[in-house]
Amino acid sequence: MPPLSRLVMSARFMYAADQIALVAVPIVALLVFDASAGVIGLLVACQSSALLIGSIPFGLVVDHFQLRTILIASTLLALAGFSAAALALAAGGIAVFGLAIATAGLGIVLYELATFSVLPKLVDARGLGPANARVSLPRALASFLVPLALSLLLSAETATSAFCIAAAGAFAALMVVRTMPTVSRARSPEQPLPGRLAMGANLVLRHGLLRPISLCAIFWNLAFAVLLVVLVPVIVEVYGGHPSLFAGAMAAFGIAAISGIWVAGRIAPATPPRVILIAGPASSAVASVLLLAVPARSPELVLYPAFFLLGFGPSMWLVVQNTVRQLVTPEDMLGRVNAVIQTAIYGVRPLGALLGGAIAGTWSPEAGLWAVATLFGLSFLAAFLSGLRKVMDYDAMKALPRT
Image (tube, rainbow, N blue to C red; front, side, top):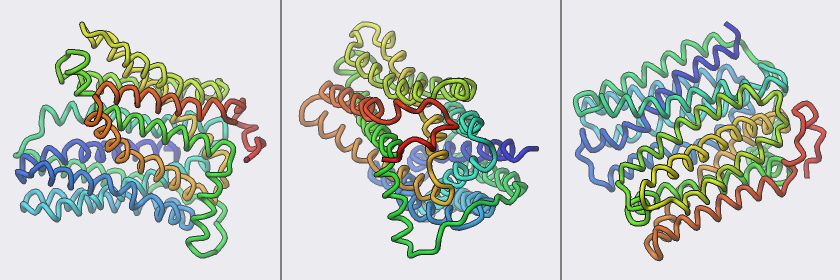
């Protein structure tokens, strides 16, 4: 089996395990531990904290050590976390459960950073787009299929089994990545850790392509976090619909994400990168306008297409911008650059949630929709008014100016 196919297979197991934990944690906290809303929030925070805590140090690790070794270490870390979570559920230890899911989350973060650093060593520039799509598709599929399965199967009695299955997924990923070949690459120069991290941050801030990619993603994630907070009140108070429409909207988003990644993997090599780099955030801006025009009668007729746009265009953009980052970043800095961008992106999600709650509480849920439209518009402008419009060809990308 080629190394890329092995990496894709490991991604299927790892991302399925990750989605099981993401969906199951708040549910089993209530069913097994009878946790209050505050405790559930704390457990979810333990899970999501891995992105903020682990990204920067793991980015340094990825740039310093052999990538095959890091992939193995990431699956071992996830396996330990999911296994400990299952044991904690069986024993009724909520504190150990919180620590265990945080550990598993760190394994997923390390795996993802290593994966996107190893891809450029497995394929050439023209093949990076399809390769990124192949590795990203398992996450999109898992985000749609796992919640459906758990909604039917998860209970207090099956909670431990769910995390055993997650642990089995991590173990299967471990068995796959241990067969990966050793990847040779340039080593980053020896220097103090703060200096190495500053180099990555400085490249992101000064680079004519990495900077707008970061700004576009930050505004988009801020907007989406606000939208998730205000959408249910908007559905009830503005659209006059049932709260269950939220689930339908998220299902449309999930299907669109799967479709967008699948399409991007097939058209990316033959499509000028700038087309998707601009069209992706543009589709979100159009979707936000649709959300402002949802009719009170039969709101799903506009709500679902709007969420399909939110999932389809940005998922294509995600594949292409990953390729851009991999091509324009020196290989000995990929881990740090990806870590800096990932930290910035996921760091704004809690801020977006707080902003959405503040706007809806101070003014109205509808005011939150206007904030969403503004932020999606800024995301589009960050891409459109930048060097991303000039990215015509993957092979010539490194020749573009960095500032």
